[in-house]
Each structure stands twice: as C-alpha cells, then as structure tokens.
Image (cartoon, rainbow over all chains, first blue to last red; front, side):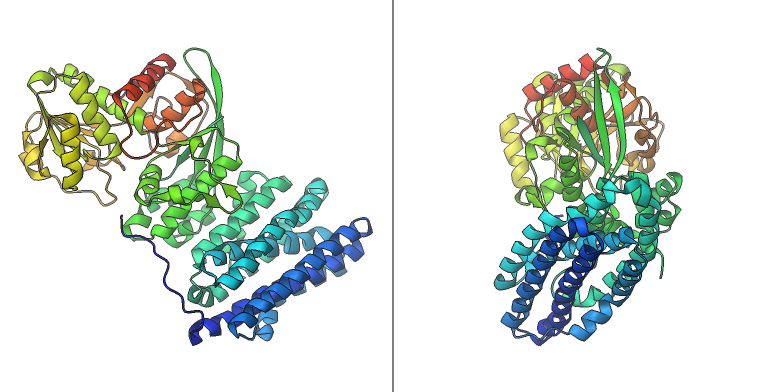
Length: 231
Length: 338
C-alpha cells in the first residue's frame, strides 16, 4: 500500500493541455456567465431580494473575468461555442422554469446544481492548477462559500410548499449533470482532475445543500440516484 | 456525541446491503459507482451503559470497499476516509472511531498531512483509531482462551503475525509484561521494525511466517491484507488457536480443522442497550450483543467524556493505556468474545 498517488507533472504549455483547457476554461467562464444572468433574472422576479441577487450576479461576473484572465495567461482562447452547448440543456430548463414562475426549480438549477458543480470542479482544480489560475480559483472558492447559501436559504424557507417541485427539478436536471460530467471526463483528465472525484465532490456539496434545506438522508440518497438514470 | 466510521466488506456485500436498505438503484452499481459515492450518515442511536448512563451516537458509512485497494484505486480509498472524517466533524461529533480499514488507510497513506477537506479543517483530536481497545481485547482473548482450553501460557508459544503494526506491537507489549508466555514469536515483513520491537521488548524470536506458525499454540493474526494469505492447515500444531484480529475476518473460511480453533479477534460482547441496525449490516454473528472493539473505544471515550484521540499515530500504545481502556471496558459492560 505504500506506492502512492503522486500527481503527474503537468506541462501547462503543451498542446494537449492547452487544447483541453480551451474547453474547460470555456465551461467555467460560461458557468459564471450563466450564474450572472440567472441571478439577475431571479432578482427581477423576487423584488424583495433584488438587491442581494444583483450583488451576487456582479460577483459571478467578476469570477467570469478572473477565469478569462486564466485562459489569457496560458495563451488559450476559450471555446465558448462548445461551452454554451455544454450548458444548453440546463440553460433551457432554467429559462422554461423562469417563464412559468417556477422559482424553486430555478434555484435548484442555479443555487444547488450549478453551484455544487462549480465548487466541486474548483476544489479539484486548485491543487493541479498553474500558479496564476490557482490564486484566482482560491479567491473564487472563498467567494462561493459565502453565497452558496442563498438558493439554499430560499428553498429552506419555502420548503413545505416547494418540496415536490424540488424533487421534480432534481429528477429532471440531475441526469443532465451526470451527462455533463461524462462529457467533460477526458478533458478534465488532461488537467489531472478525475471524474470519480468530481462526482463525489459534487454529490457531497449537493447532498449537503439538500440536507440543509430539509431533506432526510434517505430522501437525499433516493434523489441522488436519479443522476444514475440515463436522460 | 460519539461517531463510528465504518464500511462494508466487499462490493457484493455493498450491493446486497443497498438492496436490503431499499436502494435498488445502488444495488446494481459496480465499483466505479462506489469510488464516486459520498459518505452518508446512516444511523443515529442511543447507547445505555450497564451503569445506566446514556449517550448518543452516529454511524457514518464511508462507502470505502476493500476492492479499491485490491484494484489500486488508492485515491478513491483516501477520499472515502477523509470525506467521512470531514462529515463526522461537520456533524459536531466529539469522538469518532475509524473502523475496519479506515485507520489502516489513514496510517499507510500518511493522511495527517491532508488536514484541509474543502471548507473543513480536520481536527484529529476528534478521532481515534480504536486500536488501544482492540489490542487490549485481543490480549485478553489470548489469556482467556488459553485458560478455557487449559493451555498453560508459561509453557506455550504465542506467534504474533503483524507484530510490528500498531495493534500487533501493543499485543506483544501486553503479553511480555502481563502474562507468563513462554515463547513469543514475532512475524512481520519489515526486518528493521522487527529488530526494533525485539529490542524494546527485550525478548521474542523473529521468524518468518512459514516457520513460526507450526510452532505456535496460539497465533494472533493482526496483519491486514486485502487479498489474504494461504495457510496450510496440516503444518499447524494440533490443537492450536488462531485469533483472527485482521481485517476482514476471514481466517475461519481458510482454516477448517476440528483441532484448530479460530476466534474472531478484536470483537467484544456486551450487555448494553443499543437501538441500532447497523451491526446487522456489518455482519456481526450476534448483532445486538457484539461489536468491533475499535468502535467500542469511541463509545467508552464518550461515556468517560474523554474527548481526545486516545489511539493515534503508529506504535504509541502502552500497556498503561490498554489498562485504562480495559477498566472503562469492564465498567460499561464489554467483554472479549470467547
């Protein structure tokens, strides 16, 4: 058991790394852009929280700029077309829910799923990032911890009336996340990020959020299993 | 509040437990799924000592499986343990025992350098390997089974396989200091550590496994091997006792002979009231009345409000600490399985 788990030496300037990075960097920037737009839209619906949601949106926008500079630093152009396609199904589901005033569904997609996905990815990225990107990502993670709770707090406050909507949103969107995780597996591996670690970290953040909102362990385990179902 | 971090014994076992607990979706999954599964708080329960004192406990399933070591998925194995520890801490558990392979993985991969788990900084004083109580119970099992079978320890040979490990070295210290054991055979892979142990004990014969076990009246098996080892029953002394203190406990399937008694080592019987189902799931023979001694250590430390990592680090277990935990053990209603 003594042979250990050493991190492979990464060549941040290799063609292979930069090629994978163009997609991953695009995904990260697009994720933050989605978050920006989603919080602005939610603010328009929830006027009593608009100020706070706008503040959140601005923070996400700052993060997007930070990640743009990471790509620039490595001389990589983010593949935004790929990234928009990558998020398209979650994006469409969010827009549909917004139109139908399904605020709980919106918070599940943005406040729980996208946030948990981001947190998991950033955690795994930090130890293997280039020094420039590491510093930026560390600061982003600090920020994320301060606001992960907004969607959670709203869902918790309205838990009894939106419980079944949360379950439905989970059923609809978790399989999409699984598919996204599968899609990103090969590129993430080039960046020394392993898919099973990504899934585990995601499930920890997501499960914790569901627990804080009011679901029991048994309910969380059952809800998590929906991720395994094919879309 | 005390905690127990446990895991199941194989993928097959995990699948059957998932089915039994009502998660058929998980029962169909292979090792890949378990490698990415998060830890889960499975059960909360109360424990009542024979003194009448009542405490609360939580059981955390780490989702680690021994196959992760056998297939060299070490990173997954490490994540399981660290994430389970982070969950225990988030649950505000004051003292948590690392059961089964958990403490072995922690030691072997030197996880003390991995304190920061996401937004949790692990406080190691909240955890115990439970090895002091396990070593105490195994040592008492040697003494009690010898007495029961009429083996006179002052004329007997005891072999400790895995002698340089945390539990093995503690058992050797106990046998040397507290019993009249005639011959002590020390078996382990690392010769340097064996010599150090021999020097510390001031006695003991260093021997390879094949030559040691045919000479022994009692074999204490505390080496943990995911894949196990072949034992030729014909070469063993008859009668002889094997105390299976390794993990998983599978010597009884390898050694079947009427004159070779295999005893599950490091298991305690108790007369406490505990309203849990988890012991059934981890395949205790008598789920309501037996448990791993390492788990019991967390219970004892909670009863005594001894919130510290009582067992921690390699080869720190003294006879005095074993006596202390032994007193707690008796006081609250535990005894070695015989």
